[in-house]
Image 1 (cartoon, rainbow, N blue to C red):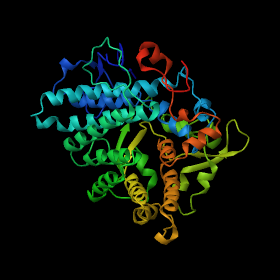
Image 2 (image 1 turned 120 degrees about the vertical axis):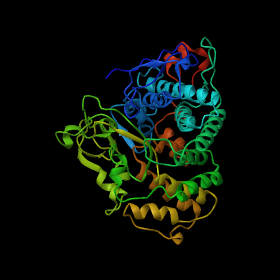
Image 3 (image 1 turned 90 degrees about the vertical axis):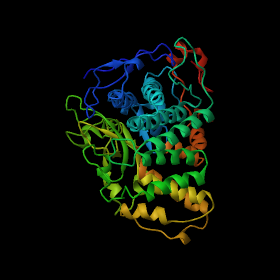
Image 4 (image 1 turned 180 degrees about the vertical axis):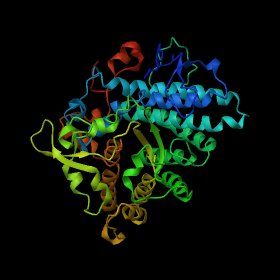
Length: 446
């Protein structure tokens, strides 16, 4: 497959931006366009270009899993510096984690600028809304991984050297973008298109992480009351690119590469040959055994682990196989279950134990239900919600943020003999070489 080249002079100077093939359902790139070449017909192609950029040109797995590797959910020998929370700024694996969200932002900026220029044209609203959504998601990825982040709108001097904006400003931009996405996007139709409800859920996630619990509740209540989604017992279907699960709210699906079914997240988490002759992965990244053993025997999620001998460890280990081996692997960025766990957590953080939303999710997963009286305090319920989030979202890039929000990251880093500042990754040395104004995160050196 031909790969897009995006020419970057600095972070601000993205002069040629990725578009895609002329078929809207085929996101394989075949061209580059400039802002002056945009029109209403090719605008959706640039939105697809933003998705392709975020997915690292069909290799999202190369950086999607890093934050889970930093957490207590995952152990890995393949990426030892991430496992030990001590990543070098010179680590080549860092580059896509920093570069690809910015390439997504560059494409989204083009769409947003064009839509703002022709604001009276209602036919542009869906493309603009999805561009706002993707830009918000990309900025959230950057600030979650690297902290302060340079905000780029695409109109800056290409010779400029932008400094990083404080995290609060990045979160404020993401919030504003998601509100604009909600205003422009239609209601949900399928997981491959942006929707108002996906923007509401991502905004609820932002609010929860920022401690704005009442606003988080408002957003998830809107998602749940929309009536467009259903919790289902077919948990594995959520992650299948060919199945439009009523729980998958928004996903990015990669295009086929030589009909290879061993790419995507199965390449990261799979057991390799010890799991069977056709199993993806190298068997060197596995899941915490205590987490897997916390599933009840009836829980449908428990079936999505395989217990086999490790590739480099002389014992049996638990491998995550909930991501199917497909020629077109997908990444579900927003799914319905999160609304219920946000609702339960935000309510508990207001001092109220209400197991209703928690039980709704547990019932769909064929797990036992609980009563309010089972939890002596809101904190006891929060402890259980944290564990339920681990069971529900393992491998989905949630746990490191959860550890930060639940106050577990600092102790984890201390146990790893790393400074608390290593809650963030270092800015790649190459980026600092190109733009010294970026600076480096504390306790890292270029």
